[in-house]
Structure formats: structure tokens, C-alpha cells
Length: 474
Image 1 (cartoon, rainbow, N blue to C red):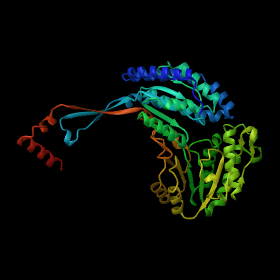
Image 2: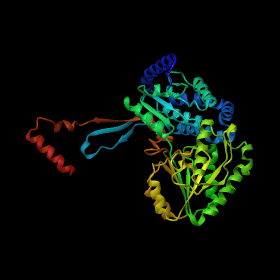
Image 3: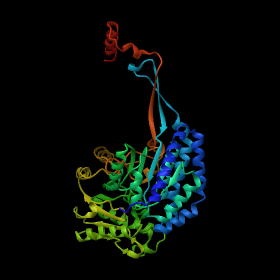
Image 4: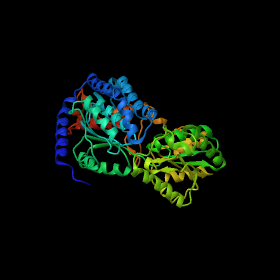
């Protein structure tokens, strides 16, 4: 890793120190003050739509409609939800006294954590930079944001928006490669919010541990789909194709591989082919379709292509797609069968438009295989059999799940979103995003002084009181 420029180090140190000081003032910030900061951000964000569209097209040919649904809509939805809910979220929560705490009053305060760091990824740069920024500002913190160097045009727009919307002492952007992230994560932040791969997430967690900083890790993994013989195959195919091939498969909760019951395997593949053609046209002409995104850069193109090539070498068959154009970073929507379990495609998160299809007869075998792998960020089930659905949900573990749908759960602001173990730590979205950047502080007020009656010296009277308390509570 290259050595970080001394002037950049000095700039990071200066902004960090300034934010540390300002974070103390923000501890007493009101709901109105926090919403005013977010209102200013919203004005700048809305005024930047044309720049956002242009940058997304420049970085990986993302169509405007996908920018609207995957980036802009999510940010505006979070702003609206926070506007409506923040006053309620900030209110102290009164807590009823337990038997052992009679004579006390208690409450829980949501206080700002302080200086926070957000490291965002390249696949949805605006959504995954600005949503956590909104939660952090709503919780009363300062923010240093490090966007991905993989999408330079989009990261430049992110920096421009933050500079226009915020004073540096409240929110600031630093650009750069992994050396910048490494230097930032070594500083004594109060909370670090990272979105990316499990491998890098481990490094972030190690760095955070040195300062005992809390973390939210939104990671990924191989999210499976189960299609049983009672499923509506046409609906399943439509939902899976959208969830998998939007953004060219570069979505952390995209279906990664499919288990389909042997009795409906051929019908399901036929439904998938029709769904792909309906979304993007004839397979041979998808490279000319402006609605189909591209792989972000040549490095990732080569990575995804190597998964395809390795699977084919191991005996896999390409059921549809398989076309690649290197100078366009184009890989067609690709369905694959006869997958060898030893293939790299079954051991690495694909993060691209390749979809392995496996067959099953016994759902117990599928559950066992899922449980033998790291816990995924999402798990999807398509079935009309409630007993089968309940068996899968109850006997597996995943960050979140959807039944008879894919990816839509991330849009539900009254549900927490996030992984478990290898696929992430902590939840976000709506109130859970606010809580991720807040410290839940317990406050107890003793009104009657009963606790003093049980303290030394342990006279006969005090001992009798203690024994009476034990008898009362047992």
C-alpha cells in the first residue's frame, strides 16, 4: 500500500480535530437544528440530479431510471422518513421501575456517538453514502465520508454535494484509495459505518477495535433463492431477473444462486429466459440496450469472466447468455446449469450477472447446504407451501429474507436491514439507522433513597431488610 501524502494526512488530522470539538456542541442540538442541516443537504442533492445522472453513466453506463430507483429514490425516502419521525426518535423513553428499583425514575436517552466515519462502496455510491450520512446527522453527529475510488465521477459529485451542503466541521469528504481508508480507520472515531466485502470488513473491524470504536458493517455473501414446485414460476422469474440483473448484478442482496425443484426445473428456466428477453430484449442484442448496466471496470470484468470461464471448464453449461465484450465491460445476463460444487462460482460472491441454477428434491438437503455456508445477507423463497416456507425461515439464518419476492425488503423503512456474522454486523434503515449512530444512555433518578437503607453498616435491621427484599423478589 502506498504511503499517504503528508499534506493529506495533515488535512485529515485537522478536519478530525475540528469535528471532535464541534461534536461536543452537537450533543445539545435540537430536532429543528438537525432537520435544518438535512433540509439544506436535500436542496443541494435535488439540484444535483443532472450531475448524478451524468456521473453514473460515465462510471458504468447506469441508465437514468436505475439511478432514480436505486440511488435517488432511496435517499429521498430516507429524508422524508427522518423528517416525519426524528422528533419521536429523539424523545427520552421512560422506563417503568422494576421491583428491585421501587422509588426510582428511569429513562433512556438517545445521545450522539460523536465523530463518525462512513466508508461507502461503488455499486450504489449515492444511496450508500448519503443514507448513512442522513442517519448520522439526524442522530447529532459529525461525519467524515470516504467514497469509493472505483467510481471517480460519482465520488466527485458526492464530494461536491457535501461541500455545498455542510460546513467541514459537520461533514466532509476525503477521496483516495485504500491507503486513505486505512489512515482514516486508524483514527479514534466514535463509530465507523462500512459497506463493502467481508474481507475488507474484517480489516475495518480490526482497526476499529484498536480504538474500541463501535461499527456497523454492511457486507454481502452468497444470497440463495429457493424455488419449490408450488411456486408461481412466472412471478418468480420476473422478480429474480429484476433483482439479479439490475445494476448488472452488482447488488449486495442480489440473488447469487438458485435451488429449483427438479419437477419444475425446465419450466422455470423457460420462464427465466422469457423474463430476461422481456426486460432486455433478445440475448444477442442486449449489448446495445441502454437499459442494461455494465460491470464497473476492467478489473471486475476480468474477475466475473474468470468465474464464468472456470465454471464452464468444470463442466457447467450456459443455458442463456454468456457473451462478453471486454472493451465495454459487458457481460450478458447468463443462466448456468450443471454446476460443479467445487467451481469458484459456488464459493465466491459473484457480484455480476451470472446465475447458477441447481436442482433439488429434498428441501432438507437444501437447508443443510445453506447452513454449511456462511450466513448470507439475504435468503429468498418462492413457494405457496407455508410449511416449506416456515421450515426454511426457521431452520436457516440470514440477514433478512423475502418470500415470493427479491430485494424489495431493503425499501421497507419500518424493517431493519443488515447482515449477520459474515454478511454484516448491525442494522440500518429508518429508526435502526438512527440508532446505529446513537448511544442508548440509561439514566436512573433515586427519589426515595431506598438503596441507602441496604448499605453498611450491616446492622440487624439492615440484614432483616435485605432478607425481606430477597424473599419479596424470589
